[in-house]
Length: 240
Image (tube, rainbow, N blue to C red):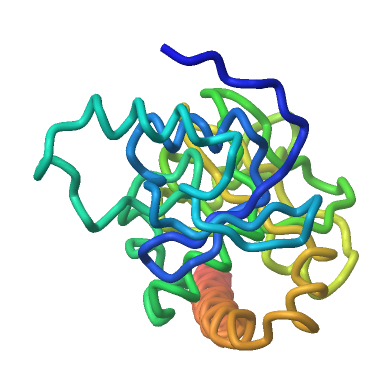
């Protein structure tokens, strides 16, 4: 097996789903080559030189690509290469409600602006009254929304894969309204307010459909809260 040189460079990969992934470091690029997720024909952008090149034309990948081609039998590579989003299984984003009306390209580009975070059971992901400017999308696992009242836990809701929390933080800097605690191990996507504001300027075609879906979701929650308030009022009046 060839020795891979230690190269401090960062890259972007133009994948077969027409999405540009990155920036990634050299070690991860090598891993994708070994996994046949990057082949000789993929276009690679080297950030340090600000140039696009075919993978086969990058000297630092030469031996690695040759070995990768020799290890894989002809006809065994699936031409539909998995999206290269580290930590996110293929097809996961299609099951997230706020991403369903996006194209594959929009989903891929949007996900690249979000950070993948793993969590463990019992972790407190968000604390009530804490400041925060991030929203989260649950990819795997379960969390509960709770408030501590008189030392007792009042569970407001349980959220699972495909659902989100903290979205109000993208629009204001108010304190968190409840705790979010993990009921199981899982995976999140995190989007910061700063990142989203940058996307508004640079990638409006990606942000607009996302904001439309966020608005729909927030409207649904407001209607649900109003309905709960109405029912509670009726119950209180009935007890009087």
